[in-house]
Amino acid sequence: MQPKFEQQMKKGVLDMLVLKLLAQEKKYGYQLISELREKSGEVISLKEGTLYPILYRLEDEGLIESRWNEPKGREVSRKYYDITDKGKQVLCEMFTLWSSFSETIKGIMEEESV
Image 1 (cartoon, rainbow, N blue to C red):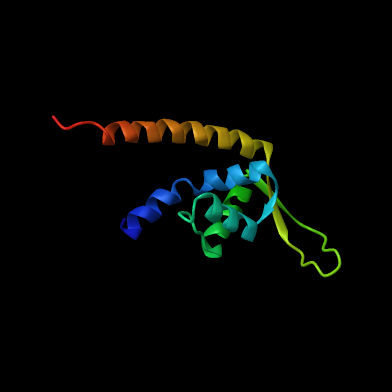
Image 2: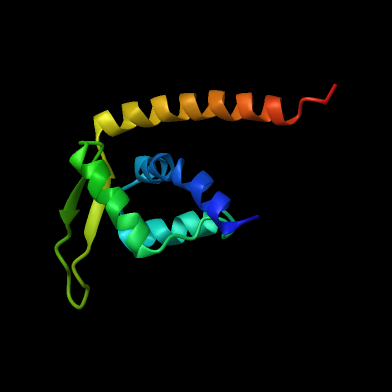
């Protein structure tokens, strides 16, 4: 697949996937990158420069919130992100829309030519 097309298709679902992972538990940035890569079989491999603008935008929209943890001992302080109630509602709406959209596209693509 051409990288341009692949990038455009992924871009449309990244917000939804980030919200889904945060709905499971609060996470820090690198943890999100790792889980997306692992759960997608390395199909979705984000760079920090892609993830953090998404996180900042979601936070600006009130869909997630962030907090720095208090390091213990030799731990480093990490910024954790957590989904808000508004974020959970929007995630449900996004998934409903995505499901309908993907089924529609699938129907068109599997249509036999006359």
